[in-house]
Image (cartoon, rainbow, N blue to C red):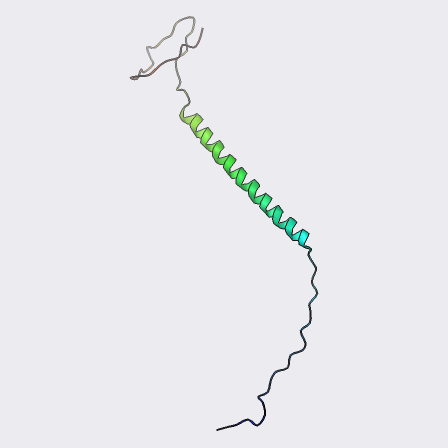
Length: 94
């Protein structure tokens, strides 16, 4: 067996040096974080607004009145109009 009379060799490293970087103040970090939160909140509000607008438009198109005959000169001609059960007609026209 081999025995070492001395300590095993160590690698000597230079003393650690501090690398200078651009210092960012705590206020700048906080502003950056608050800007990110603000951007996130605005994005969430825009998505909610878009979803609500889409639902409103779908509701509007779904419940749009059907094409109905218009009275002309006091006469409402329903001869060519298909009448369905439980359908109501508006009396628009002159």
